[in-house]
Length: 167
Image (cartoon, rainbow, N blue to C red; front, side):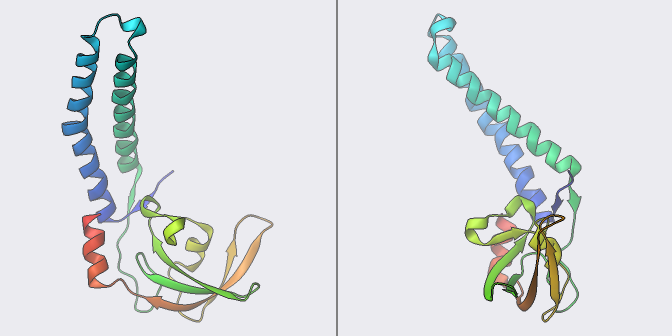
C-alpha cells in the first residue's frame, strides 16, 4: 500500500529512524551484551528480553524505511475553500441528523479518539477537495453508504502549522 504523506510526515519518520539507529540500537546492543555476561543463556530471562527489545527496534526501523520507500508525497495546497490536509471540517450526517467536526490528516497521523481522520478513510476520501455546501456520498463498502454535507472548513492556524512541523 502506498501511504500519502506530507513533507512533515516524512521528516518525522526520518527523525524516528535516525533516533532508533543512533540511540535505541546502541542501548539495545549494550543491554544484550550486559545480559549475556550474566552467564547461562538458556535460563537467562534478561538476555531473552534484551534480544526481543533489540529485534523489535530493528523491526520498527525496517517498517519505517519501507513506509518511506512506498510513500506518495503530497502537498498541503488546496484551492480556496476546498477541504485539504490539516483542515478542521464540520460535516452534517443527513440520514442521522447530527454534525461532527474532524481534522483531515494523513494516515500516519490519524487518530479517531482525537477526531483526526485519514484522507484514506471512507469519509476522508469522500470529502477531500470538496467545498462547503457540497453533499457527498460516503461509501463504506459496496452495500453501505451514507450522505454527508460539508458545513464548515477551518484552515490550519499558524500555531497548528508550527505543531505539525514539529511532528
